[in-house]
Length: 536
Ligand code: NAP
Image 1 (cartoon, rainbow, N blue to C red):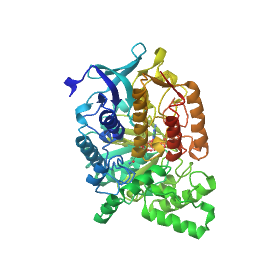
Image 2: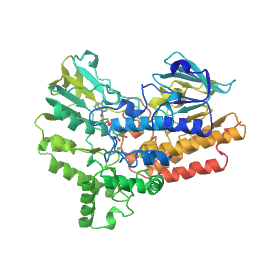
Image 3: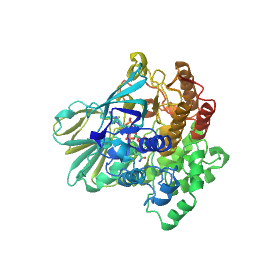
Image 4: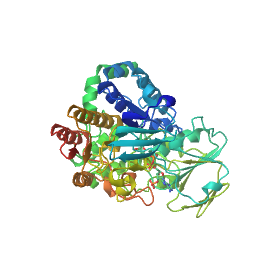
């Protein structure tokens, strides 16, 4: 559709993942605005367009990782497994796009390279990789929180003669590991999913671990006909649950505190949660994520499980050498991750005690060893939450560059708007619950708020909306207060703080107060006719 792109739109939306698609639907179908979605990929999917690495699967259960805004979609679509795989999520988003005829307003292979606010015209100029400059009254970023891949700057990588990949930019054609000697750097949620699958076909797999990770079994399985019926019959109940639980998932966090029960009962509950599997393990007790002593009981339980599973004592020691509390970093779930270290073709290197020195033509050299490799997999994470926004090269009022404005960390009001950047809305931006929740739930709340806000502007003949530095400072304090009620900011090397990217300012970015509290705050702002924003 590139040839039919117009010069001017009411709204340009950047990104065709869960958020961009729903935002297009709301603005075009409800408000009848003239909209265009600009998407770098060749298809819909957002993060799932790029994440095709072995084992890539969502950690949220499929009956919650879904849109809830449309009864029709919910009734017609059927997930096949407890956790949806990457290909099935793309299939789902294609189904939604076709259902609402969304693709006709999406320009694929169109990367946004520059966006500039034109103060006189009160419009955004958006420059794209397809040599088109488009102008729009509203600019809505739907770029995802974990979309800008981070390949660490390791000396000599450019000399490597084998092939290397980042999991977040995985080739569309299957990568064949058969008979290959593979090295994988990174053991976050992604790395933990990739290891067992790569190990099945590679001749040898060496995992380079910097920080161990507490992982709980996912216990993925095909969904039974009975469960599928349950989901359809309980659609409204599920919708209510995801919208009223702090993390937007379809499970309820226990009200019981760790020390409300004795040790026997505590272990019984952990055991039951371990057997059930999934992210809900962290909801076994209410205070696991807020109280250090309570957290220790969960951490110790998982450590014990790892030591029981992993037969090689040296590997078990490396895999349990934690210096952070369970769920202090985003907790992964897995399918046979720890079991994979019992395979003869899998090796583990602790790069804390034996750091990587350089990469050369043939492999990775650590301080104490050398590893010949045919392939390197970088499961090394993202410049999260801010990276993809800064990459849009945004200039707001008075020539203010977003990159400069955020030099000391992101400043937003509600994670939705940035002072000095009128009529620009950031779906699941920094300062909103986003990555601490089930993303589609957070996305629906944001998209609906933005749609209502734009409708209010149209109905009341307002041309621009912008927030103030005062409001973003106040909100920044609230984000910190909410984080400080949890153990999350105590983990100094977490991507929630930006600590994984050298030179990135370290500020706790997501709002940790929970979705219902956050929604209430946003709703009050809306009911007050957007107090905290300047409408003109
Ligand atoms: P990540 O959590 O940031 O993990 C990156 C891994 O690479 C860590 O083990 C990190 O070690 C390591 N690493 C980074 N730089 C390194 C360096 N210079 N040298 C050695 N090791 C290095 O990234 P991710 O696993 O891609 O996950 C990011 C987020 O995406 C997750 O937290 C989750 O929110 C989301 N995600 C979701 C799903 C899902 O739902 N299915 C799946 C995957 C990811 P350190 O810990 O020491 O920094």
